[in-house]
Length: 206
Image (cartoon, rainbow, N blue to C red; front, side, top):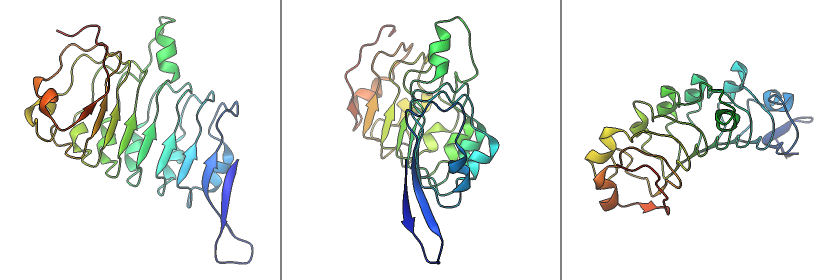
């Protein structure tokens, strides 16, 4: 399903929303790429998509991208080209399920290029075996919601704990979700920052 809005021109159609959730897709559908110039919202949750092709990152106007419950093995560095992206959800992907089959994948980390997503306000990477947050992550200064539920991160970046009033450089961060997270170190200053911490159930806090 997708929403079409008319534009100036006798035969033109402006497609800025595509919703292909629960569509049994194994790859990014062609209609996404046909509308790469105008697409602003793309919902591809609950499919069997294993990778994002290079031309996917031509979606320069994309503002909302949801890819939860797929089978992605990595998040390509091209994600950094989405300078208008406001909301990104890559939670519950195949790499989490693969862990229980004793097969490890490359998506145990986010690409460092994600720091170039200057407009990002909401990021959900829950239920993935992330080992760490990339260098420069705190450059996402517009980030308001960060969900790290049920991941395998060993420690939060050192700089996060150095600015308790503003949670490092993430001065707009208001919601931090850390449910069921196996974390080795939690900065003391997090408790005194201006954040809403979701209920936590730490099972390995030193």
